[in-house]
Length: 418
Image (cartoon, rainbow, N blue to C red; front, top):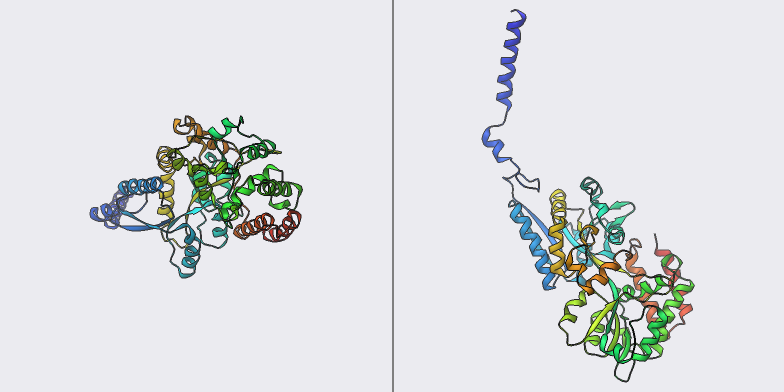
């Protein structure tokens, strides 16, 4: 056989071999992928999802994401389960032990590092690096998703704290909204009457009280790594002084931030520390009010609140769960999601939307996002927070002096910091 005839023969044999090994048209069609999830068209999978939202707007926002994703990916079914906020932590920990976790979970951002350290959450670092949009997020929200240099989620929506005030009461007293601690004490005193407390914060044994207190610690130049310092003592004494003088509700150790808001709406509190979630009820209240940044001391500071997306470590569909989260972060879709839920963006590239820029109340919180600090203090933060709550209650009830309570709290906190 000459070389030319051998070449033709070889090509013919190779062609027959390739045809025989190729999948049939029917098989190829059955494995086509025409969706972002990466799941073949002939497969149907279910993604389980837990969140604690009962707010009507945020419910609508979540359901919007789910329905839009399912429409674009008809082979993916998302099963959403409501878990009350107070039960979510235990349910996740018990679910991890029993191997019964959802694929996607929506969690409070101060809890994120604890769950990452406990092995509950999937490491999404490589997915996020490939995605390439991490630099679009404010530093505060993003830091809450990080643990030991790895990323375990995406900030979902944010909030922070500011000072709400009754405009009629301040006008009648001839006062401008306070911008610093001295003005705050002065205004609180002048606004306090037999029927009205000048100033209100949460003082109950709950994370909400730590949430309200930490901005004052930061404003005074202290933090958890130097908690037993002048700044913490000054912050605690500011609250103690106004409490002792009757400027703050005497039952504040049993009041949370929603209780304080109800007192504000009823006209029993003239000024209060609170967050964006109160904008809806206040807009329907029969009072005149406004909101400004928290009064500052040595520096301006506010605290970050909000929720994060995460994928659990036991998920068998991490790729799809991540695709759903990524889908929710597309700027136009995320903007509508946040508007429905009355939330502040964690992404900087959507903050120019008129919804936030032209609403004077929302804009106060939006501007606070630039320096809003997360409670990203490692996996033991929940115990740290409990320690701070106990310290505040001990001081307000005079069980301990400020100096004693701060020193004792610091001893515990330093053992709990990473």
